[in-house]
Length: 300
Ligand SMILES: [Zn+2]
Image 1 (tube, rainbow, N blue to C red):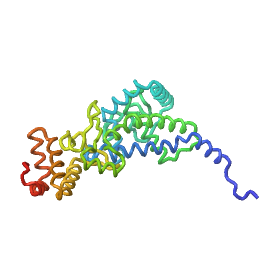
Image 2 (cartoon, rainbow, N blue to C red; image 1 turned 60 degrees about the vertical axis):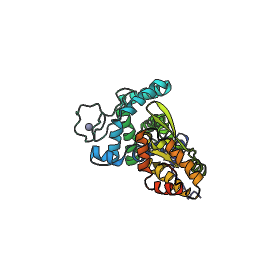
Image 3 (cartoon, protein in one colour; image 1 turned 180 degrees about the horizontal axis):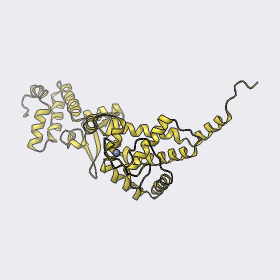
Image 4 (cartoon, helix red, strand yellow; image 1 turned 45 degrees about the vertical axis):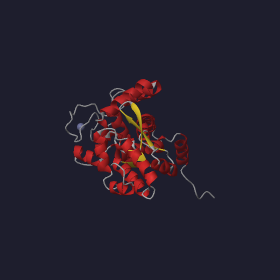
């Protein structure tokens, strides 16, 4: 008895989809991209200030305007010949059959569409370094997948999603992911981290400009604001967090004047300029009376 009959073409489609499942791969890749923009890269108030809202579209327009990413995209094409070939193929593919959309955000970097010339090219990537339209392409493919429900059986849809995945995944892996990794404080295991933190050995690798800078917890008290936010156990932290943790440690060492003095020396040793010394007084104003009380002969 064949009571549980299913559409055979569906079985075949699932099988094909499982083999080269660009659809789910792209959805996950896009979710990672979206989270990077919204939860990590751009602050909500910054986006609201520029666009008057915090719609996904505004985050997309913001990265289109990010000249830093545009030049990193070009560098990626120079450094990866195979990747450049894929982007060139995509460019030709779209030029043959543009990916048109109802509202034209192609070639558009404005937050309020309608201000752009209406003769902007639509649905195409002008050339491989056209980062603005590459981003628009990613977003259009995402919209089509989420809203229209692409059919895995449609060869053109399949090709578009495959191209979107092939380009976004490399951009994410080579450009966006290292940004996160370079801000991550080490070590990664929490117990080990706490130990290192309280012995002043926890450090952050941070890319500022073209150099891979590295600073320990004490140095982070005085580093440029560009070093922040850092990532600790998946959460973003600022300088106030570091100050808070060090203050907590000083408080805990109250009963042991020897260790307390050692820790206080570690903190003050890093303050090299009069400005830094003034910062120490400000940062630790709440615990300085306690430090003085434990070590009466200490100069603060
Ligand atoms: Zn526009």
